[in-house]
Structures are given as C-alpha cells and as structure tokens.
Amino acid sequence: MDRYLTTKGLFLRQATQCKYVLEDVFGNCTLPFEATTPALAFDAAYDLARVRILCHESECQEMSSFSSFKWFELEKYYVARLTDYFRYWQVGQNNVSVFDMLTHGLPTAYIDAGFGEGTRDELEKVDKFVNAKAEFGVLPFTNQYLAIKLSHVQLRRICSDLMSLIHRAITAFVELLKIQRKTIMEECWSAEHMGVPEIVHTGPKSYRTATSVTICVISLCSSLDISSKLIHFLNSCASPIVRFRGAQGKHYSDLQKMRPISLPENLVKGIVERITREKEFHSLIQLRHDIVHSTTALEMEKIYVGNKTGEVNELPLCYSFMPWRDCLESGQPLRYLGRDYFVGYGMDIEWQLLNWIRAVIDYHLFVGAALYGFLTSNLAEDTGVQLVGQLDP
Image (cartoon, rainbow, N blue to C red):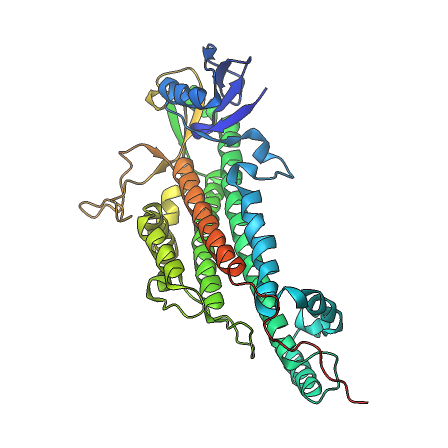
C-alpha cells in the first residue's frame, strides 16, 4: 500500500483500499479513517492533524525518478526537444543528417578537454586553427557549420545547467524531509525526559536542514536566471547563424526588458505575463536575497520536536516543526520593533519549499513549451546554410 510524506515529519499510510492512517516514525498511528481517493485522504489528514501531503515516500529512495515533481515533463523539453529542434531550425530538415555526421570531425577541445589541456588558451589556439583551415577549404566543414554547432553545444549546456539546478533543489528538499524524521527519532526522548510537550533542537541536524533550505532556494533562483539566459540566447540567434556569439548572463528580472528579435512579440509578452501572475516568486527571490546578504539562514537552524500538542491537534504523534516566516504579498518578512521576522502564521517551511519548487517547475514547463512551439513553427526543408566545405585537391 502507498505511503506519503507529510509536513511535520509524519506519514500518511494507506491501510486498505479506502482506509488511511497517519503515523509517526515510531509507528504510532491514528485510528483508520475512510477516503475513497488519495485527494480526499489528503484533505482528511489536514483536518485531522494540520498536516499537508508533500510527496510519495518513494521519492526518498536512492535512485528516485522524482516523478512527483514532473521531472519527466522537464526532460521532454530541456533534454530532448529544445536541443533537437534547434538543429532543425538552423539547418533545415533536409540537412540534419549531414549536420550530425560532421560532428565526428569536430575537435574534442570544443566539447571537453582534460589531462592539462582544459585551458582557455588551449581552446583559443584550437579555435583559431580550425577556423582558418575551414576558411581555406582544408576541413570537411565550413565556418558557418562551426558557428551553428558551437551554438547548439551552448544551448545544450544551458539546458543541462537548468536541469542540474532543479535536480539539486529537489534533492535538497528531500534531504530536508529525511533530516526532520531523523531528528524526531533521535531527539524526541528529550521532551519526555524533561517532562515538556515540545523541545527546540539546535545542533548538527538543524544546521543541515538550514543548508538544505539554502541550497534549494538558491538553486531554484539560479534556474530562473538560467531560463532567462536561454530565452535571451534564442532571441539573439538568427536562422541560420552566421557567426558564433556567446550567450550572455541574464538575470530573471531582465526578461521584462527584453525586446523581441528572433522570438515573436506574442511569445515574449506571454512569458512576461506569466512572470507577472506568479506570486510565489516574490517570497522566493526575497529569501534568496536575505540568505546571501543577511543572517536569514540562522532563522532556520531550529527544529521543534514534540508530542501531543496543538501542532498536530493534540494527537499522540511525535512530530517536528520548522516554521516559515510570516510575509507580506511582496515577499517581505513582517518586521516590528527591530525584530526581523515572525512565525505566527504557523506555515511549515517544507510546505513553502514545495510550493516554490512546483511554481518554478511549472514556469520552466511553460517556457519550454513556448520555445518548443516557436522552433517547430519555424521549420523549413532547407535554410540555405552551407555545412560541407569544398576541400582543395
């Protein structure tokens, strides 16, 4: 039967086809309650113990697919479609096989280099040599092929970086959930020993949770910047490319100032409107700013561990609680009399992290679909590009 991770370090376990229980890391559980669908069980869990469902327990496995986080949907665009159809857009459908074949003649220094050869000077020397030989007809490909190929490689790197950042954010989130449960197992005895319902744990485990939150938040924000870099790069690419131009580093906020060049105006406008509608990004970017420039990470170095308190509606379950600070709609934390933050809203930090992850992934899927639609709607049989060089006898 399925088991789901919830906020406050608890689990929602399916006992029978239509019955569920809430349980803690020690196996203590509630009486079974009926729910005909998982969605109804999620609602019942919140009514019962004020907990929200985060993800399936399988996401904590060593080789998790991260399917709960739409990982396969992301791969569809940023691993396959955008990089594949960039070739079609640049060289035309009739020339893709030739474009791919010529890749075998490209020096490996353009892709990667090791054993002391991975230097900027080495790559510059190779690039000048190859361009000169291609210009004089000594190589089987042209300078234009090289420019398109390097742009294609650059696009793949940008997409790979975006996927790596999202993977790092999800991994950090899952690590946070694991640490919370480990803290309950190792620290819950303290509350019983001291005769109190709840204790505050501060130590190596709480430091690791703060690190996990930091990695998750910074990775999500960096992925938004990488997405902006991808959009600006495609917007600057002519079809076909004549000369290679490096992708400039662009921040997420730069999208609202971007002028359409290669990308159509309605696509750019749609992305800007999507940004404007997304309210979760305000608090996410604000937290990233506060983590980097202030002592905000110290806020998260506490894990409350208790049993049978109002956090879980007085149920006899051992729980953990990490509060997320109260914020305005702009993302700014509430402040008063020199106090930098408050936690009166009772928001679990893991729930807020999950909302950010979902919002960022949905945004990337929206952008991926928009860019893929642009590439597929601008395909041609032949773009007039010259890929094969005229070798001198």
